[in-house]
Image 1: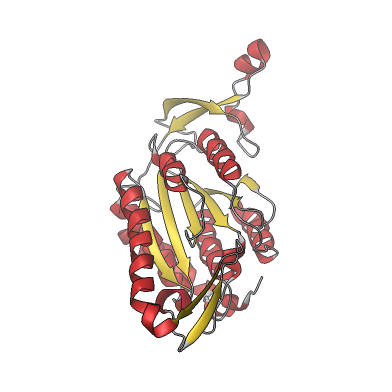
Image 2: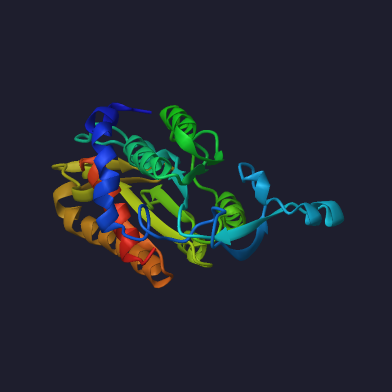
Length: 301
């Protein structure tokens, strides 16, 4: 994966980012917000299925010994959150075009790593999952700077390939639904161009049960404005589809179709309580991080 985006992100500037985000995301990162951390004034919130990385102090041993069922007890306080990062690593995310400094997956990795850094510095937990055949290892919930080093290592070695099969998407969403605690945040990074039918409903469903979902659409500048002149041949990265067209004549219709696709995702997600952001790989990654935090604050997270 092309990692040239690393030099475009001022990691040192993220230290005050958490402070600046306190106003934009009040009640989320630095102020009072729902949490699972045990402490004074906690309220029992229920049970959920155990997933690797969960704090074993919250494992219900009675359920384990009596029924052989592994569940953890959830509590609510006013401290941390759990942030899950999900990256689309299908072949189309490997596209960079003629003007971007790197592939869409590389850009998404930097934004996601930055979000993970902000969350972990704030005492929150972070995990990592993948859509599609590419990507790398999934990471269970982790906290502290060691979790950040693991996150960066996996993202640096990720590859974009293959496609997103309907059954794999359904399996992933089902697993995420079972292992994402109430009050958690899931951030999806994808171009949302070649996902299977029903993907919108599957992803939007994760916003139920007091969970926050943000979908970040990552597009290359060439995909946004089709800058080519004269006849062009466009080849799909995740199928055998080939289109021969005249770029200037097709540009307006192409951009209108892309706008409709983005609007469909935005409207469908917002209607279910989720958030949708559109980004370009020419943007400054820190600005996208701030937009994600602001969107969560606007959602009342």
